[in-house]
Length: 240
Image (cartoon, rainbow, N blue to C red; front, side):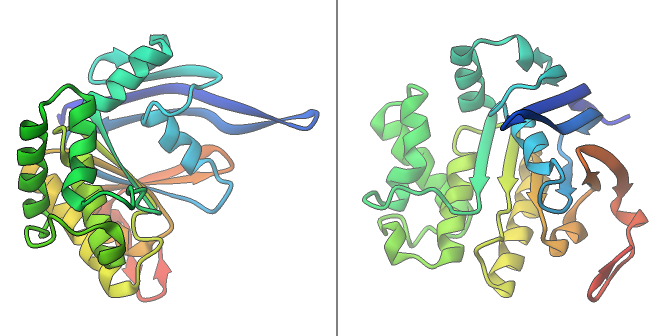
């Protein structure tokens, strides 16, 4: 049996909108395995981003449990959650979220400096991981000097910098053209296989399915189905 890295049980999340309560997640239970590539799919408003945020310790559930690497996230203080995120989870966002005044190396080194590394240690590690994602010749370029795909590679390098157990990628191809998006998908898959990092994506991009180990379909805040890649029939324009 594969090792469970993320354990979710009876997860519910409610939001107040005006005078009404909206349930964004409904009794979600799920195991995510160490080293797997899981894609969370669903239409806008389905709850996939809310589930993504719970896994990433970016939000707290109304009820239920989220356990990552044996740590019960729901029991941690805000300070403890911030420390946990910095040491165990790397984030990749649709909008890249790079600091425009800083070089690629400085952007990747930032979380390392926050975690206590010296400037020299952080710079060396940043250069290593940027080279690993194919940007060894762009170390001193600023975001505005890079293409969208290169900026996303910097964001992936930043996510990998602290050697996290999990990379959470939120619509990582959403701002990219078809060819560049495919490059980013292949890169995430390659890194998962080479480093053993668990990759969890929240996405609308059906190209992501082909590199996924499993696909979780969310509908109306609940799990609609959970499929292995070999159970999904992917054809041009359709997914079954």
